[in-house]
Figure (tube, rainbow, N blue to C red):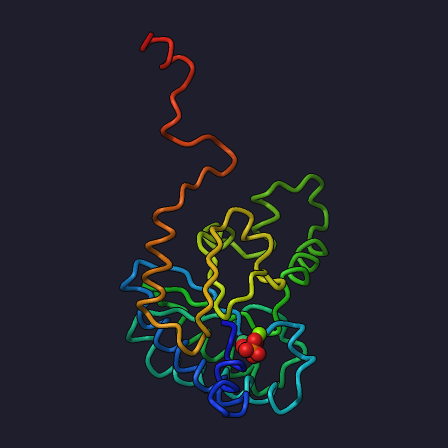
Length: 230
Ligand code: IPE
Ligand code: MG
């Protein structure tokens, strides 16, 4: 969800105002997601490298997460939205950890959409932590390692579409393993301006991509077929 700061500066506002506007965008996108056929949505809210930012900005982002968790407890149950938070917890304030647990517990039954907020998240950090859990597993496979990384749900181990707003074209340590075959979509739109219509456009573009996973296009005739056709 990139571009909050630049969105604000372009309007002569402090960066934190951009995060507030970004918060509203996040609420709108999550609400629109189920209607667009999305079942799993992971939002990169705060990377482990974002600790380098000024304390005031970090505090703003944390307060927004806490507000989001509170609002989720209130209305995600009714909406069938499950919320979880991925990333490290050991550097977050205890109060925030308690709010995360409360929101996760309150929404655990949601089946329409699973939203994951990545907070104090680093894909490399998660991969290292999973590797440390390998223990006695002598020859890990892609799927057994993925279970260590993301838990029991194999759907979470494969990202279909990655969207980055704000014009940068890089992954910035987000879901590196899970994006092995993700379709990448980059847009110059700043996150606060990212609307459900923009999301629908990204999904439409995704629908036009040909996903081969290292194989050949499905329409490619096999040698046999060519022979039969003479
Ligand atoms: C993304 O917006 C939100 C967070 C990383 C918390 P940025 O804060 O990166 O916005 P820009 O890139 O400075 O515009
Ligand atoms: Mg940025």
